Image (cartoon, rainbow, N blue to C red):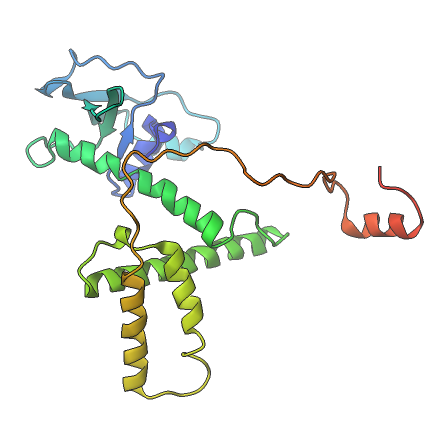
Length: 253
């Protein structure tokens, strides 16, 4: 998880659901490796104490959270040639240092970046950057339908990776969306033979597996927009009101 969610309450709520946590330590929390039970260099187990009840939590939920919780804190260095060495402090609920070594936890946290890539895929490839519905009920339906479509695409990626001996993260998500949409012409309302359907599916999975994601270590891009937006004013009134004003010959101010 991101360091923003590294809090006692968030970790405790996840633990109640039997979910293990591996998150970066929040920058405001002080870490002292001289305390607690030492597991190794910059690696120890410490008791966290429950803070005061936050405003967003009800009293019943707060009372069900334990007063103390054992967590493991560790620190490791990221060394890359040509770059400054960076230190990261991780907190996790994986307490057994023999089963989960320091290197294993560091590697596990490295997969957190996949979460950012998944959010980008949902917002850009599946066009959920702006919701189209207006009512809360329909917004929830739009959100869950998009997530359902995302899971279906990821399942297709996993099937292609399994058949062609690749890792799912090595296959392009956007290309998979394009192949699935293009294959709808083959899987239309007309009835087709089972053998032909199987052949089409295997051919589609083979083509998807060929769309690999390039390994580009050290890639960095500026967070700027290349295309300039048009200098129109923001719509701050309903469209019908603005159209009526234009039909009446009034200027939009």
